[in-house]
Length: 465
Ligand code: IPT
Image (cartoon, rainbow, N blue to C red; front, side):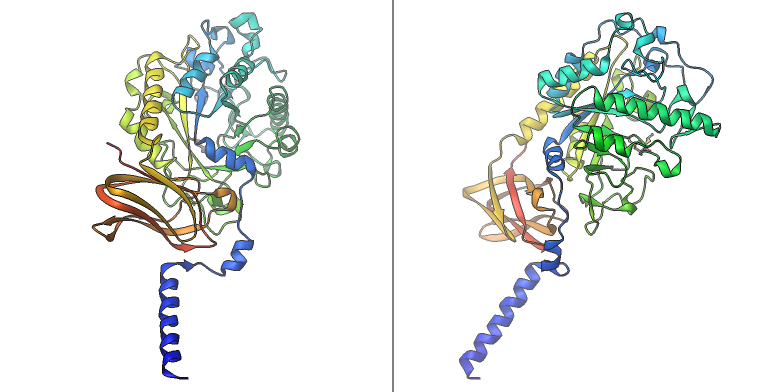
């Protein structure tokens, strides 16, 4: 080998070594690229929606002393349920003002009282004076969602029901097998009604997961697959598509890193609270987190999910809500904000105001970037003509192609030198990062670990004051 060739070889080794240092591919990248876990198109649509609301209204709002777990032999009289000013348009307008793109209605919570005229039993709006028992709140809610272009979802938990003496995870407390069978039939019938009579649902919510048939629960998988095969399902049964997992708290705070993939250790079915909250980048199921948080503080009555007179002061401040936004949407999970409905049947004025303030603030902060770009590969750069003050970046992967990034740096060019501003692991649909204000002439995203070529749908820079 002559000297020139030898030098050339040394140079090549050094270059290859540097490249390897710059972007470590995890595992056998070719193999992994082929095996990338991808979301369904519904899950992509769901991630794009980013913010939803979870609307809670139940008979206990009219009788706050009632505790469904406290006295199993008593149920509030349906005659007390009379929301004379009920206006589902007002609910959805409030949701829209908060920036919500979807809304989930709690059609049946733990009391068992049903907001639609179910055929399964009489403990519902049918037995109430509201509209002389002729009304259907689920139908009104769906119509309002359509009217305002908000995607509708329904929550009807199977895990708890005061009227049937059922507690988590969906078992009758007496242990009586005939009562259990009867209850399972009620669940199957009610879910069949909700999933058949109101059109396509964007999201179905199983609070506390759903007890599988094999463990004595209702047989809902075939009903789900037949009636709402495309719905995104929060804590749904394994084996169904479009799953979404809980983030493990009701504060709207996702753990970081927050991977969109999960497996049985990450408890997509919601049975365990503390394990696997990060998701698992190696796991085979696309099952991103949804961070639920009531607008009213968790220390409020009923965890802040339901209205009670005199609790307006329990509404989270704008700063607290923005903090939740950064720690949910900013961490690759959707934010689902709990909204209360009062005895009139309306979202209270104070809540309407707070929701609008939140929506206005997120728009003010993030609607207009200083600069943004798309990119592919390990490096994406934004250049400024003149040095510019920046303090936030938003990174979005094209998740339709999978979650590919495992580690990255964000640097700013300061007087010609790249300086580290922020670093991270998971990106996925969206990562928002705030850092100290810096005057830079450029921003560089460097991906140091990935399982396939990073596809950056959006890299945006902001100076938020
Ligand atoms: C909690 C459930 O255990 C969990 O599975 C999930 O559904 C969550 O609610 C939704 O917020 S129970 C709650 C009292 C913490």
